[in-house]
Length: 159
Image (cartoon, rainbow, N blue to C red; front, side, top):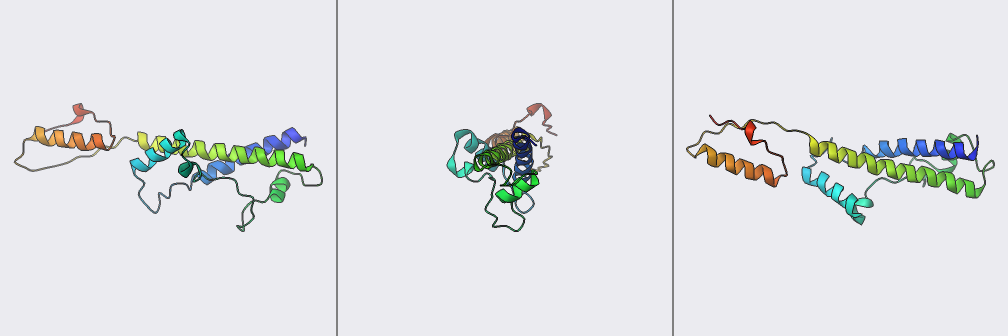
């Protein structure tokens, strides 16, 4: 395999691993993630907020985890080793993997945030009250607007 082929394979592997790592970013199975959290992450990425940017998964070659990657393991998976590529070439291969990993993780997180924010929510509220129904509609509209929900008032029914 040529160096360019190895770098291409490292890039593809980095993208795949970065996308996989991003799937764990929001712990949706254990806690409720609010619209505000999705919005904060998107805004933090757009602003380059260090708190958000530092929380995005990055490639880890420390070997501290039993199933974690090491540089030697990456090279072996790509069909090479430190005897067949120079130190400079290894750095180039690792850099390609890391950049692809980071880009894919960020892209997947952004995509997930956008998809969660774009979901349509439909619900029915039944209220028995002496209050004017139009006043209740106004209060509900204000509440939904504060939650950054798009409201189609033509869909409201007042019986």
